[in-house]
Length: 458
Ligand code: PLP
Image (cartoon, rainbow, N blue to C red; front, top):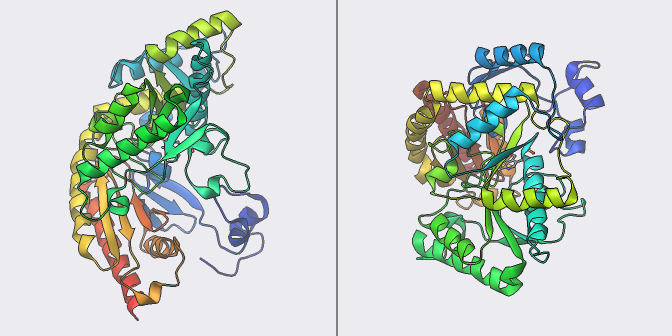
C-alpha cells in the first residue's frame, strides 16, 4: 500500500529504524508497512482495527491460534518458577526433561534423543553438524555430501540456507557452502513430462537421485534432507509412491534421511507428523514452528540410535559434543511447547485439521478450472492455489511473482492474509479454524481471482 506517511507515525518510525527480514529494503522505504497490533483465535487486527483471517498462521506456525490462555499461563508459571536454565554439561530442568520425553513418545518412528535449538534454521544447521560429526566418528571422513531438492526450504543460516534452493537465499551471500547437491523437486504438475503418470514421475525422480549418488560416489553421500510436503516452495505435495521410492534408494546406499517437519509437524498434514502421512522413516526429524505454535522460539531435533550412538562415542573421545545454544532448551519455551502439544491433543486439532482441511480443499478445488488457476493442491490443512498467467496475453509482461503479489494485496483488502510462493497463493491457517472460516477464505479467494481476471482481460 502506497500512501503519504505522517511524519513520526509508527509506520514512519518502522521505516526509520527497523531493518526487515525478507524485504526489498528500498521498496519497503517507499511502502506503508502493515502494523499488526493484536490477535485472537485465527484472526489478527491491524493498528487501524481492521480484522484479517490469518490464513498463514503467522509463518506456517500458530497451530493453536492466537491468544490461547493455556499457553500464556504456562509461560507465566514457568517464568516465575525458573525463567532461565541451560542444558550445557550435565545441568537440566523439568521442562526440558518433560518435553524431550513427550517428543520421543509421540515420534512416529523409534527415536533415541532430543536436542533443543531455537529456530528451524539452527535445527537444520545442527542436523548437518551432527551428520558430519557422525561420519568422522565412524571413520568415514569422506562421507560429507548432503542432498536437498529444488524448491526446498530449510532455513537461512550458512549451512541450512545452503540446503534451501532459492537463488535469493544464496546470491550476494557467497552461498551455498560446499558439499550440497541438488536433486529434482517432486512437483508433478510442473515437472512431469507429457503423458507421464504420477508413479512414473516418482520413479524418474528416484532414478535421478540414484544416478546423482552413483556419479558422486555413494561413499561420499551423508544425508538427504526433505520436507514431507515442500512448504515455502509452494506447498508441493509429493506424487503417489514418491517417498517409498526415494527411501528405497537412500536405504540401498546407507544414506541418512532427515525429515524437515518444521511446517508439517504437529497436525498440519492431517496426522501428527508429515512422516506419518507419507510413511517416511527418518533418522532425524527437525521440528519447530507449531512445536510451540510460535508463542516462543524453540526447535528440536529427534535423532535415532544410528545417529546418536556414534556421536556419543565421539563426544567421549573428544571430551565434549562442542555444540549448543544459550537459549536451546529454554525452560519457558519448553513449558509452552509442552502445553501447546497438550492443547493439540486435548482439542483433537489434528482431527480438525483433517476434517476442515478436507472441506477447505474441496472448496478450493472448485477453482481448478478457473482461467487464472493452474493447479489447486494440498493435503490436511495446507494448500496452494497456483496462479497461471498463460491464458492472458495482457499478463505476458508480468514478472514471476507479480501476479501472486497482486492477488495477495487484494486479499488483504478483503481481510485475508496469505503469502505467495512466486505465483502460488499458499494457505496454512491455524489448525483451529472452523468450516465458517474456511467458507470465508474460499469466498474471498474466489472474489480476488475474479477481480484479477477482470483486470487482465480488460
Ligand atoms: N524448515 C522449513 C521446512 C521451514 O519452512 C522453515 C521456515 O519457514 C525453516 C526450516 C527455517 O525455520 P526458521 O525460520 O525458524 O529458521
